[in-house]
Amino acid sequence: MAEDPVIRAEGLSVRFGSKTIFKDVSFEVRRGEIFVILGGSGCGKSTLLKALIGLVPLAAGHAWLLGEELAKEDDNERRALLRRIGVMWQSGALFGSMTLAENVELPLEEHTDLSRPAREALARSKLGLVGLGDAAAKLPAEISGGMAKRAGIARAMALDPPLLFLDEPGAGLDPITSAGLDKLIKDIARDTGTTFVVVTHELQSILAIGDRCIMLDKEAQGMIAEGDPRQLKAESTQPTVRAFFRREAA
Image (cartoon, rainbow, N blue to C red; front, side, top):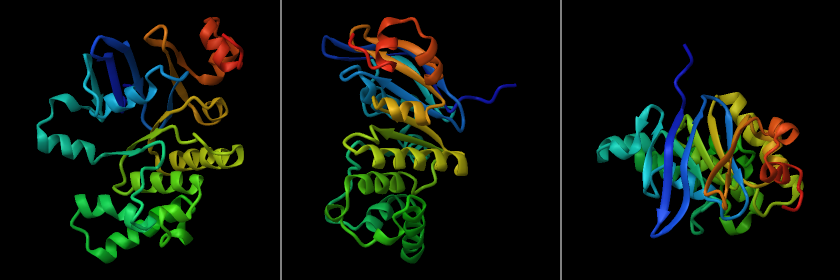
């Protein structure tokens, strides 16, 4: 029997007032894979991520994370479920007055009864996992954009969630730094079995890390492709999909 999906989305729709962002989006995310939500600017990629974790209300449809429907949980059950996921926002969203170690400790302080020495040790361990073991005492203003993204991933991993969401991890990074971040994501997925959902429009990253993907389209107001991104690039006959993967003018 096939293993239950980590995420199951059925007929998801989001509207802001009279404006439909996307409609009737359905897909599954399998355990241990790197799943990419891709598409052009304004197609609703980040909105879909926020809808999956309950930050944006659904106009229609249902979504299950780790076998539980977030929308139907009571407050305690909802909080328990949210502790089992981690999120890295586009900018890293680090607190500027706190060191990297303190940023990573924050979820541990909020959601565990660990002693301060234990929290500090875990924070150093997570920062070491993303290559920032020597930067634990630095403030966000003292590090590069790529390091901030890594620190954001470390904080998202603080509670050892089986599911991580990354919102535009390569945005604003130079090609070498972006490639290093891609390698980090692949290494973490391989070494820990963590499932990743990555929102991006960066073509090189999509092809480098994505096991499977869905593509959203602004004009279609929904999903226009699903599958292995390399196969979509080679075989898709849908004009918008072909243009995206081959970097052609639409």
